[in-house]
Length: 183
Image (cartoon, rainbow, N blue to C red; front, top):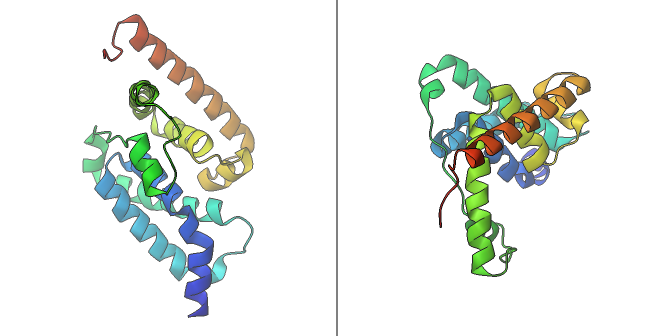
């Protein structure tokens, strides 16, 4: 019972980050839920090997590996192009926070901009997408990302730079072609 309690104390706070990473890798909410469940089960079974240094990086590594293993095994995932968006107000309500955007007009503009950014991120190659999600959404350090993705810190830095440049191109391309959302 003590192991379970300690596991929950250390890793349940990282459940939203685990789901977020899985959703970006699988591109489908239900598949992401399955991967997170599988990853947490794997993590619990391997809990005795956890060294206690960085719980978030450890669990996200397991989530990433579960997703990548499943993606390799099941080619149907490669053809999924859906990107389900989460309304910022709903997300903040889920975690018990007030509306950070204040007035509805700001919320509407932020939602539109968020949709553009999420769509651009979804178009990134997988190796760049996972780096940008881990850094910008999950706020992991370069060293933590390097552990999760199992690459040197320099590779993290170069992929992050390429991901940001690619995002700028995608967002500029949409704006230049008039593909922004009209209100």
